[in-house]
Length: 158
Image (tube, rainbow, N blue to C red; front, side, top):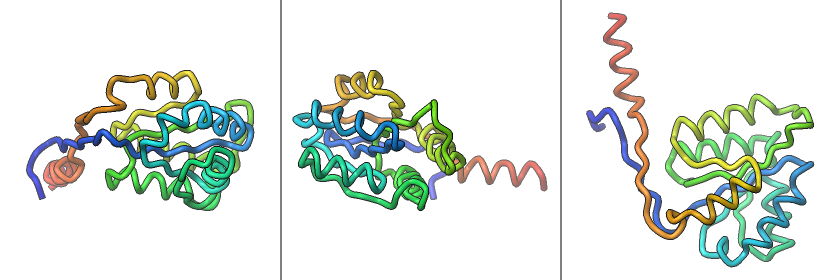
């Protein structure tokens, strides 16, 4: 275990992109993927159940599918973020529709912020991410070393 207060993660030139969309946004996600197919085909794509399946079927892009969001897919993607296996998240959530698995959604968004990965919650931001100069080169991001933080908190209470 490292004693550094921060841990550096390097995103490779080839990005690992998670694609998630609520039911009311799936059509938009598929259309966005189709419009950006040439860029996306050079990266590794994954997504929650139905979203991944629809993107793959409609665009021909290979997308690794996890479980449906309400059945644990959000947590699966969150765990991949923690492991360093996802570089950024495109999550088109529907602000006008309540979600029965809203705590899962909030947990996924929280873990994305904790691990400092870019998140797009709408198509405009997704377009900006794809147009970024960092899409085709390595990028270093720094994350707090939570093991050290926890050790320091424990010492404080002893």
